[in-house]
Image 1 (spheres, rainbow, N blue to C red):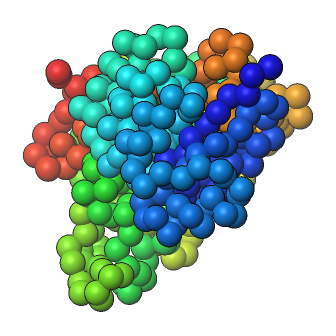
Image 2: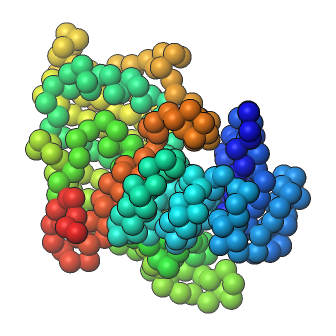
Image 3: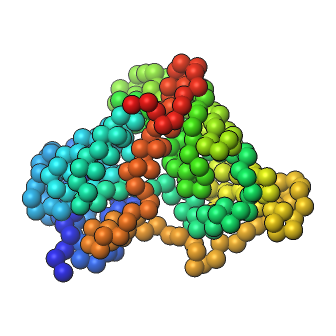
Length: 354
């Protein structure tokens, strides 16, 4: 079988941790080229992983006729132009999350993907909730919750808690756009189990409004918040609240809680533990402490297969589930709606007006 030849644009931390090992574990696939932001970094990756060809510019890699597919591991500001150029050059595309800088770019990427239906396009999925996805999906489908009424989503952690932590690309709006903390990827997980959102109202804040530039030690204003709160309405009438923070050094947690007319399901995103209770199981209403753990059977526990899924879609035509460009557009619209609402104080409807 003819090997699938892959070029890497941006071999950063996640590419090295997941994509390179995942690609190399797949039969008849070769990583043949790499292009990083700096020439010395490109050469370092090529030497470390034995990649034969290097490029100074991503445009050169994307245009090369000897490359079949492109894996994009750059920061979000390059996802859109590289994706569109790769598709027009006849390349399959696996792009790192977050999908794009904003909703407009996400739609441009989706448009290009639809113009090339024979090419595979995939967004690296949110890893949150993958292990227990099948169990959650089945319980919701079987009516464990009854009518969905309330949702609580939270992710509180502390990478930005130290005032001396330098500005990273995640808080640089010129590199990350409207993306904030883990808002998009956690919302992506929620979307797998619930109806879509139709309204968003939000507030954002930067507890540490300026950070040190790692290049010159000057303090510069941050471009994205370190605290986000959202109220939302879902199709069907359920209400949701979101709370995200990057400045909580203690009491860190991440989870999704679904409350219905007949039951409740909670998913701990850090431990992959599911707990719940339902009238349909003969359980009486009670406190959170009364919720019983719901096991994730080994045969239903998902593991990380993103790179293998990408190759299978190219070689065998298997449909992409985690994650399609359509799903990426949806979470980018949500993220932009949060930014718009926080800026204007208004309620923003979804999907966004064109």
